[in-house]
Image 1 (cartoon, rainbow, N blue to C red):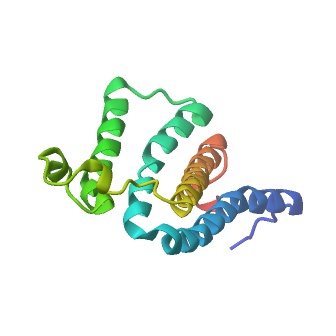
Image 2 (cartoon, rainbow, N blue to C red; image 1 turned 180 degrees about the horizontal axis):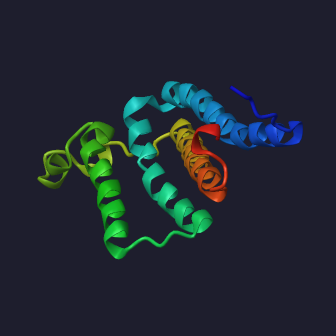
Length: 153
C-alpha cells in the first residue's frame, strides 16, 4: 500500500493536542496517591462525587451543550445519592442514630475536623477539575475536525 506523508507541523500539532489530556490524567493519577494517604478512601469517594456536576458544568460551558432539566435533576440525584450512601462511614455513626438521640451529633465528629481533610478536599477538587477537563478536551478534539478519519485521530 501507499503511505501518505504526514507533515511534521500537523503531526506535532496532533501530538500536542492529545498530550493535554494525557498530562492532566498524569497529574490526576499522581494526586490520587497523595489524597488516599491523606484522607483515606471513604472520604475520597465522597469528595470525588463532585466530578459528576463539575463535568456537567464544563460540558455545558466549553462544548455549549444544552442539558435538559431532567439531566440536571439526574445529576443532582446522583450526587446526593453518592453522598448519602457514604454518610455513615464518614461520621462513624449512622444519621438515624444521631437523629434518634442515641448519640449527640456534636460528638460524632464532622468531616472537616482537621486541616488534612480540608487539604484533601482541595486536592480532590483539583483532581475533579483535571479529569473533567481532560474528558471535555478529548471530546472537543474528536468533534472539532470531522474531515480527518476517526482512526487517524
